[in-house]
Image (cartoon, rainbow, N blue to C red; front, side, top):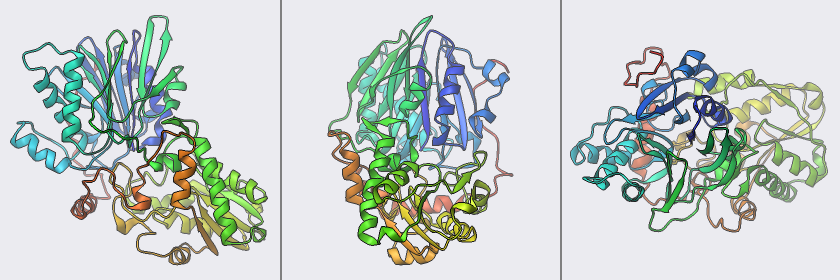
Length: 505
C-alpha cells in the first residue's frame, strides 16, 4: 500500500503534488518523494519520513515544472530502511522515465534475472519498483525502435509489460518530452483514478490512488482506471486510453474497503464509507446470532477506520455508541510501522482510554480488523484497567488467516494471530470475554451490492485465494527470509544513493 499521484498542467505543480500527497499520507508514512519536469529535465527530491518533514521550502523551490508525480511509501518489498528505495525511480534511457508504483510484483525475482541476462539492464536495489521501471523502459525501447514515440507505441509497450509482470500494480510514469502514463494491473487489485480541473493557465489532469486526492485539490473525478487499461496524457492535457490486457477482470483489494482507504474516497464505484457501514450491519447480524445484545452496555470503536462499522452495529442492536479512546494524532499508525518492537511500544502512546465510558460497564469494542493480535490484546487490557466489567471484541473484517503478497504488510503466516488458530484460541490470546468476527461471504456481498459490476475481490488474506495464480509456498518462504534479514536498527544503514540533482543544488 502506497499513495501515488501524477499531474499534467500548464501551471507549476510542486505545491499541488505536495497537497495531494498530504491527502494520501494515510497510505504510507515511511518515505515520500516528488519529481517534476521542466522541458525534458527532471528534478527530484525524496527521503524517508512523512510529507511535511521531507519537503521544506528549499526543497519545493528545487522542483520547478508543470509536469510531475509523487509518492508516499509504505514498504512491502525490498528494504524498509533504505532511502535509496524511496520513490520515484528514474532511468535515463530510453527518453528518460520517472515512475511511481503502488503494489507488489510477485515474480520480481524472475524478472531480475531476465533483466540482467536478456535485457542487459542492471538492478541496483531490492525494490520491485526498480524492476518495474526497467521492464517498462525496455518495452518502450522495443516498441519505439527506429520510430518516433507515439501513443500507439506506448500502449504496445504497456501490453508487453502486462505479459511479463505478475502481481498487483498501479503505476504512474513520466516520459520526458512526451507526457504522463498511468496503468493498472489486469486484476485491478490496487486502486487508481483520474480527473481534471481548470486553472487560469488552462486544463489540468491528475491521476491518483484515491478520489480524495482529486477532490481535495479541486479536481473533478472522471473515473477509475480500468483493470489492464493504460491512460496516456500528452503535454497538452489530452487524455488517450486503451485496454492493454487480454482478459482483464475487476478484483479490487478488499482490505482497501476494510482499512486502507480514506472513508471519503470512492473506489471502483463504491463509497468506502458506505462499505464500512454495510460491514457494521452484517457484523451486527453475526453478533446477534452469537450472543444476546442485552449483555452489552455500550459500543466503542477503536479509532479510526472502525467508526462507521461500530456506529451501524450500535444502531442495529439498539445500544449506545460512545467514543472511549482518544487518539494521539502525532504518533504514526502502528500497522505501518516496521518492526514488531516499535508496534508494541506505540499502542499506549497512540491511544488513551476515557475511564468514565468503561467503568462498571460491559463494553463491546469494535475494530476494523485483527491482524497480529498484539494491539488488540493491549487494548482489551486498557479497557479492563479503565474499569470495564466485561470486554467483548468484534472485528468488522473476517479472520486474517493467510499472508498477503499484493502490497499489504502482512506477508508471513507466523505474524498472523488467526493463522492455524480457532476463534476461541484467538479470544484467549487477546483476553476478551467474547470475540465476534465478520463473515467472509457476507462482507463480499455487502460491498459488491454497492456496484453491480463488482463480481470479485482480492481477499486472499481472508480466503486464501491468490487471484494471480502464480503464488507458491516458496514465494512465502522467500518473503519471510527477506523480512528476517532486515535489521530493526537502521542507524548504520548505508545512506549512499543515486539521485537526480534538484534545481536548488
